Amino acid sequence: MSIRGPRKGENYELSVDLNSEYRDKRKDAIKRVIASMTVGKDVSGLFPDVLKNMQTEDLEQKKLVYLYLMNYAKTQPELVILAVNTFVKDTDDPNPLVRALAIRTMGCLRAEKIIDYLCDPLQKCLRDENPYVRKTAALCVAKLYDLKPELVIDNGFLEQLHEMIADANPMVVANTVGALTDIHNSATSNPFLPPDDPAIFTITSTVLNKLLIALNECSEWGRVAILNALSRYTTQDDKESEHICERVVPQFQHINGSVVLAAMKVIMIHMRKVKREELVKQLVRKMAPPLVTLLSSPARGAVGCAEEY
Image (tube, rainbow, N blue to C red; front, top):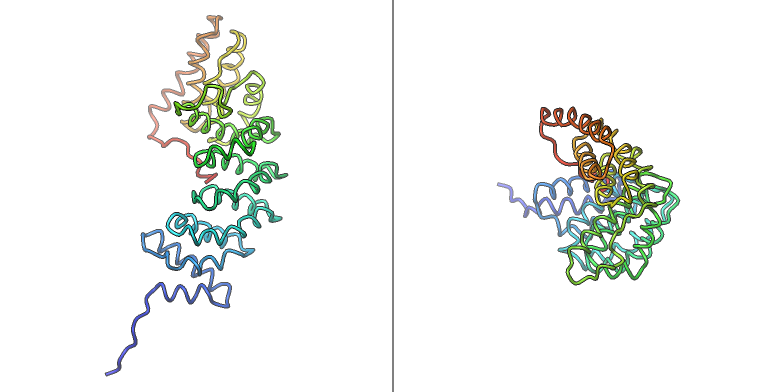
C-alpha cells in the first residue's frame, strides 16, 4: 500500500501557478482565484502572489488583479499599500483605459492608507486629455468626498468639478453632474455644515444651459443624473420654465423607463410656472402614452452605474 504525502490544498496550487514562469499559466491562475473569491472561498492568503501579477500590459489580467484588490483591501490594508506605486504609475500609462482603471480602483478601495496617495493622480486625471479618463475621475471625487470631505475641499476638487460642467464631452458633463449631486446630497444632509458650504451644488442659468446641451448626448445613467439636477433648478420666469419643458419632453420617447420617469418629474415641477394653458395641455397629453407604456411593461430596475464602476 502506497503512502500518500499530505495534500497541500487548492490555495497552494494556485500560489505555485501565480508564480509560474509562464504568462498564460499565471493569468489562468488569477481567473481561478477570482472564481473562488466569487463563490465565497477565502483566498486572501494569496494576496502577495496576486499582487506580483499587477504589473502587466495585459488589460484583462490587470482588471482581474484590481478586482481582487478591491475585494480584500479592507482586510489586508498593510498589503494594499504595496500596490500604491503601481496604481500611481498606471495613472500615467499611455493607454487611457489603464489610466481610468487605476483611478477608478483607487477610489473604490476605501482603504485609509490609500486615500492620501489618491489626490495627486486624481488631479492629473481630472485634467486628462481623454474624456473617458476625465469622466471616471469625476466620479472618483464623489467617492473621495464620502471618505474624506476635507481632502476634496482642500485640494480644490470641487472647483475643478464646477469647471468640468463646461466640458465639451457630454458624458464628462453627465458624470460631473452626478458627482456634484452626490456631494451636494451628502453636504445638505449634514446638519453641521453651513448653508454656504462649497459642497453645495447650486444650479445657475449658465449651468442650466450646459445641462440642456449635454442631455441628448448622454448614456441612460447620464440622462437620469442631468434630469435629476434639472428638477432641482428654480426657474427665473415662465419663459425659462417653458424652455426647460420643451427641451425635456423628447426624453419621453426614451426606451429606458428611468429616463422617462426622471423626465416626467422635471416636466411636472416646471410645468407649474408655465402660464400658457395650451402648452400645459400639450405637455399633459404627451405624458399619457409613455405612462401607459410603463404600466404595461415588465418591471425594470433603475438605471445603475455599472458602466462606471
